[in-house]
Length: 346
Image 1 (cartoon, rainbow, N blue to C red):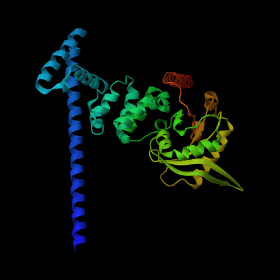
Image 2 (cartoon, one colour):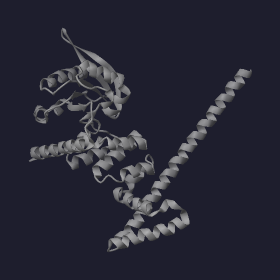
Image 3 (cartoon, rainbow, N blue to C red):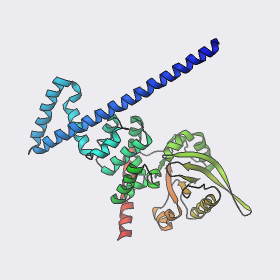
Image 4 (cartoon, rainbow, N blue to C red):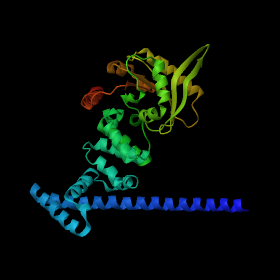
């Protein structure tokens, strides 16, 4: 009888704690949304007043005067730098409807990481991924510092097409492959240096799977290593097989040491067609393939038209270059991709 009472009391306390924590979380979300909405409105009002002036000095005086009055009444949260950030916030997220959908998931600290981003598409990409994936502020900062956007295929598409994909994400949480796959992949956490073989690369990935999956992209789940593909009297072995929940499809990953070679295409096409016939479930999209190489020739990849077969080719880096070198490399790749697309359209 005593044990039953003790268990009942434990269950009661568990339920009470759950109710309290749920209420606290809901209150925190409501307070955060109210705070963000207030800052947007303050920024909007100040921005309209500042724009009404003909000189920059007038705008500075308006912000300075408003800050001094508000601090006297409401405290240090309305300093001149704080009001300036609110104006910038309103400028960067000028569409109130879009901002309203974000403020229920993103805190003001999230927005402070996004405000400095000048590129509209880049900023919207991080905002929407943060909303869908539920990133912490720390994770968002790490994604920005790791140049996630610049490494996606989305960043290399014409602005019109990129906006269409971001609109689909915003309205229906539908992520496209160009938002998920990236190039290059940062595999410095594997601890590989000097000469190593494909089996060393695979073993290192399996050992560091908790770090590899976030780098691979949103929605990935590990399925199997060395997946046997039986065709006729021959057996082939796929290095790694994943499932992506965001894309609703299997993703085959082949690991290659050295430069990409055209014959890799036929190998991956065989694997994808076998998976499509034998492993694809009802409601799933066609399997996709990712070939990871230490280097590749962009012209070869372009001529092979791998996208038509659902194949992506990306480089991986086991040692990261300086940020300046990486930025130069990624910006050059983005510019080259856009020139190539412009040439095809022309």
